[in-house]
Image (cartoon, rainbow, N blue to C red; front, side, top):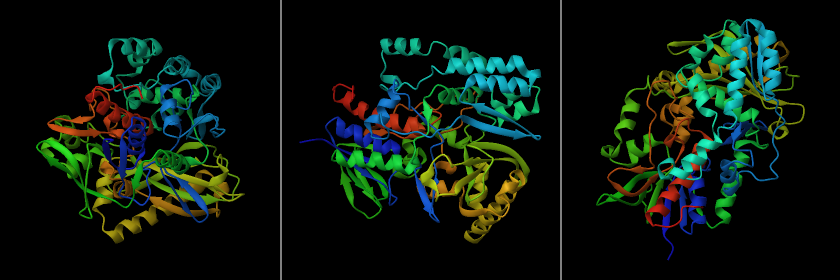
Length: 494
């Protein structure tokens, strides 16, 4: 009889775990609290338009990488996948000028030097280190703690230039990187894409992912990709239960035996994989005594371990919009709780014709938020929350029109959402849509995918490794199954 694995959470981590469990010969059941699986890799429709929640670029689109193999195995992409014809990472507008990080590094270097000749040396250094970082690939053949010396040697050879990137940008944050430049435009360009406290190498590696051709945007968006993965799971014989929220994990004699649903139904299994936010795992599904010390410390020290989230709005327009792809720009200050924001971004989805009716385009704005902003949104009553969202949506519209006058009278609000939205639908800690922000000088959370003192329980999901996101989630599902295989002394090569 096949062993049965029960997976909590139908996000990308849970779906990946389910597919790899089936591939390894186990039975697999996924229990998802929402009416549709996908977690944060999702999208929804409003007024004949589609709003994409997740994919800005998909790391692992280069067929020569191990991450591509994972995406291919779980059905996300294949050799025939079509990608958007995007030509840049993002543009920054500041002080009446603009600068762009193009996919073409030579073009970026040339244009940035022309815009800020006083920073030529630093610009050339930055571009060179992006080239070094193009060889950086996420090791996903097996978990790091299961690697042997040969695996480390192989990884070291493939990423020989990464130590140069870490030496130059690994100990400073984006604020400190920006201060190396004289031009206000260059400062804004390098500081505004991510939270300023992020390590500078995070930006370098992210940009290099796109310039290397390993970060394309699949057409159809997040929901379409998730649906392909769900189809693969079901076609392999997996069982997906939606509208099935979990109450707790059944523990007997320090062993995970199964799960209890909110309905009261109990489901027993040989192995349990938790693929939900770790704040739910350790705060609701298990006794808090199982919380690892470093996780508990991270939750208590939000200044050292902040999250990134946002207040977002989606509009549809029939105007010929001059802002292409993603644009960051200065704006009149917007007050949200105790903080004021004078920069926002807008993403143009015209590259994907299935997102809006012919002649129209979906635009999405974002104001970056963090833990303190989540607490503000959480403090509001239902009426206050609704009113504040509508007030801010109107302010976002006004600021878009100020920056892009062609949008005057031609914006229609589709939807708006907050950090609390991510908590409500995805159980996301403080509304975070990535793992903890990686800050210089702060120890990373080291999760080996198991819970000390508890047998037969494994952890998947983006929170097991910084910086989180889709690649970590997908790999973590594979890792969880490999840990089970290792325990059974079977081959982990799946």
